[in-house]
Length: 354
Ligand code: ADP
Ligand code: MG
Picture 1 (cartoon, rainbow, N blue to C red):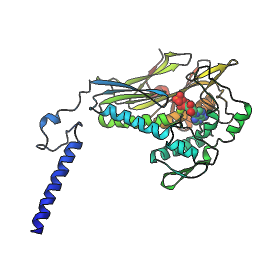
Picture 2 (cartoon, protein in one colour; picture 1 turned 120 degrees about the vertical axis):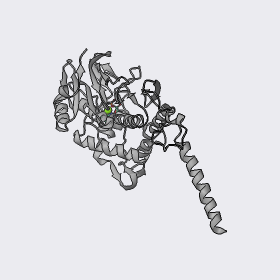
Picture 3 (cartoon, rainbow, N blue to C red; picture 1 turned 30 degrees about the vertical axis):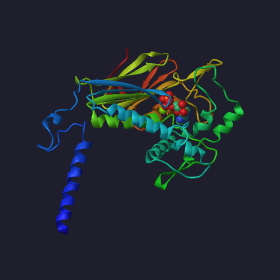
């Protein structure tokens, strides 16, 4: 009697599990489903690679565009949901975000999302690699400036700037066990130079797993996944710093990211000097090097983002040295319009200058 009842319940549970599995597979390609379980009509539902869908969002103070080929229904919504989640987690200005909690902790450890911890780990690593040219602890200096291009643009006092610079040192960020982060009291972090890269990587991963191909663009971070339905590679234009509606170069990509940091994007002129949003962590002043644009072509948009920001600060000579030493592919544009490439760039990437 007992045994019969147990068997019955086992059957009910097995049936419920089977239903759940079928339900959770809805909308995805089904070619690996065992024959006979699903109607064949579902197996043929793989989206047509030629069907293109586009969307535009606004996150992290930036226009985000997503273009998908052969995407299942729901992927676009899933991408926007992730962007919202990352903004809530990584924005410095959203109360309750991991970054806000770290900045408000007054020297106490804070437990963060594992993804935040990973970004901080990478940021610290690239900060060390670039001799501090990339520093997320730039936040107190960054918040003294406003680069909206409006009348609200400000130049901080020397005293305020120097006080802020004294609080810059990424190596003082303590990344502890169980995803804890401790920042010395007074210091602040700002992930503006790396977070968009991380998010581009995650969106690219979603596209890779579910669609035929796609492109995500978050400000200066572009990630292309796959190829055009006709087999042609995607291409990414590198803006001419003197006229950002024109391209200085076009890079043909496979599955990879092209990330550009430029001094021409956000900033204003002050006494004949270009003041822009990439700061020299040593001075707290907008970096005054010979570079106006730095582009990295690689697999990790997060690393490319941080490296591009660092290279603007370093200037062409050190930037080339750093990129070459790491065997990375980069292209730099100097103030006088000279285009510089890392070793082997021209052989590796098909590019053309219009
Ligand atoms: P964008 O955000 O326009 O793509 P970047 O990737 O170059 O440009 O990042 C610039 C942002 O990073 C700034 O708005 C600021 O928040 C932050 N930042 C500025 N200077 C530095 C620096 N030296 N190291 C790290 N982050 C920086
Ligand atoms: Mg960057």
